[in-house]
Image (cartoon, rainbow, N blue to C red; front, side, top):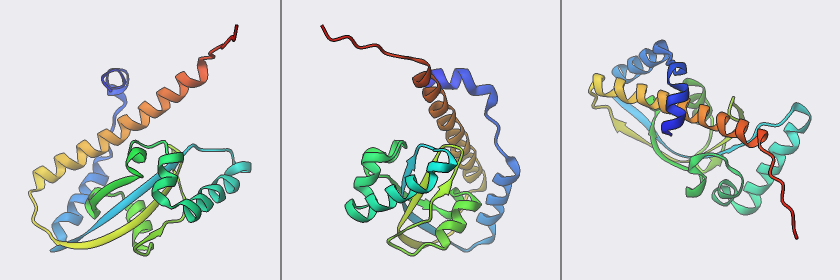
Length: 174
């Protein structure tokens, strides 16, 4: 992580308008939604293989369950925990993902979301409503840290994939 930070620290830019929009959302609401979310993030594929890859993951989820599929196929850090991200307040989730979650029934898996990191499947395990007690400065710092962490994670995955593709290991059996 330190290496990735040193390499990419000057490239981490956060959309302050999106942060301010989220802060407005926090301020305006007396109650906020909180979601218990699981994720599966799989490698991107070319357009010709996209439907095949999506159907494969959907079939695995139907056959083996979301958590086992996450452990087996997901490239995200949450894979070892069955894809569990935990409880996330709606204010910590991007507008695009909030929209997807609002259209997903509890216990169901969302339609696949194409992202720059790969193909993302979200499972909405549960939802609850909390009273909104806020410290705006603390929330702003949390949002900024979260966005920076996402960017660093994206750079780390990209960097690792570049290294993986550039190194060939030859294995000779004697």
